[in-house]
Image (cartoon, rainbow, N blue to C red):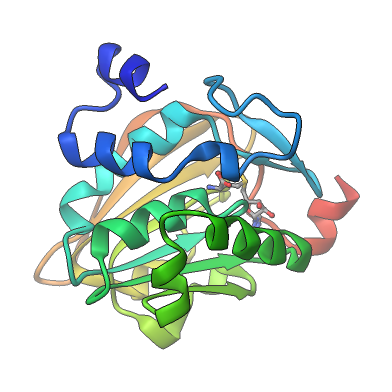
Length: 214
Ligand SMILES: C[S@@+](CC[C@H](N)C(=O)[O-])C[C@H]1O[C@@H](n2cnc3c(N)ncnc32)[C@H](O)[C@@H]1O
């Protein structure tokens, strides 16, 4: 899977290749699901684990803001795969935070991470997983160098902009039916620049009730 993503130029750096090899996707997909196929997979509760090429794209876009010691927030953490990758990148001196609003998914993401190469980071606390409405971010460990949003928002939630550090970067799908993956940079003077990276298709960033109603 990683070689394939490198071959097609989705993975461009050694660090991202290393992290995606170290965090084994097979531990994060439901039993009986082919782990290394480049496609999103249903994980229940009207949610999916994102396709490997989307995980790789987001890691590449955020790599500079996932250096050892930095703080990273993963909103809509789902299976916990990307949060675990963030935790390895920022290391034990950093902080990786996952927020998911379906408690059952949060519980299974913790079990997934406990089987993975990020287990020690979860145990000693530099990686933490929380139930909550990710549209509010997670103020406790703000400001963040990197924020990833794993579900599509109709517009960029202000609390997430507020929790981005000057110099920080957020990757977030924005839109309803037609969505763009936006890269949001908070400049050192506090102003914000936004650009579109590519067209995407994600499940909505919404309320728990709306998601469960489908
Ligand atoms: C595409 S899925 C999972 C993505 C995750 N990166 C993965 O690959 O496992 C998006 C997730 O966002 C969650 N979600 C949607 N709206 C949310 C909200 N307001 N707060 C927190 N999580 C939310 C969904 O429950 C779902 O698990």
